[in-house]
Amino acid sequence: MKDYFIKKEADPIIEGLCHSINPITIILITRQGTVISEAGDTQSINTTAMAALTAGMFSATREVAKMVGEQQFSILLQQGEKRHIHISLVTEDAMMVIVFEDYRRIGIVRMEARKAGERLIEIAHKARENEVASSMRNAGVTSPSKPGATVGRTMQQSRDDKISTPEFKEYALNLIDQIFVNKQQD
Image 1: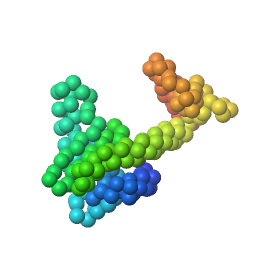
Image 2 (image 1 turned 90 degrees about the horizontal axis):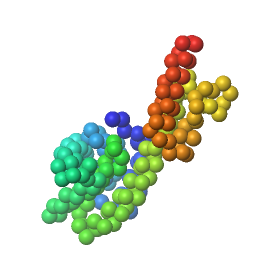
Image 3 (image 1 turned 120 degrees about the vertical axis):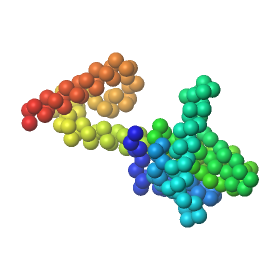
Image 4 (image 1 turned 90 degrees about the vertical axis):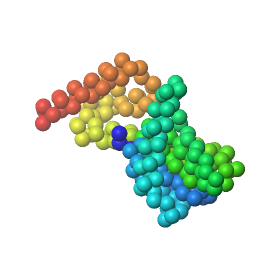
C-alpha cells in the first residue's frame, strides 16, 4: 500500500520530536520497511536494516494480536538493559520507531510520540486528498461546484458529511462513469 507522507513535511515533525525527547534515533518507516524520515544519531544504527526488521516484527506481532482477539497492537515496546525501542503505528501504512536509553522517560516518549503521530496523520490525510484531487483532474472529472460538472457530490462535501457505504458506492460509481464519459468525448 502506498505511503502518503511527504518527506519534506514529515522531516520537521520528526526533527521536532527528536529535540523534545532527546532519543538516540527516530525513524518513520512504511509497513514494507522503507525509511520515510529519520532524525537523531543515524550513523551508529543501520536505519535501512532497522526499518526492514521492525516492519517484519510488527507484522508478526499483528498476527499474535489476532490470536488473542485483537485486530493489532498499536504500540510495541522493546526493553533492553540499556536501550529501548518504542514502535507506534501512525497510519495503516506507517510506523514510528524511537530508540532511547533512559527507561524512566517512557511516559514522555509515549506522550510526545502520540502528539507527533497526530500531526503526521494530518499530513497523510492532506496528501491523500491532494492525490485524489489530482487523479480526478487528470481523469477529466470536474468539481460539481464548477460549470459543466456532472459528479453528484464534491470532495469537500464528502469529507464534511460522513457518507454511508451505499452513498459512497454511488459516489464512486458516478466518478467511474464520469471518467469513461470524458474519455469517450476526447
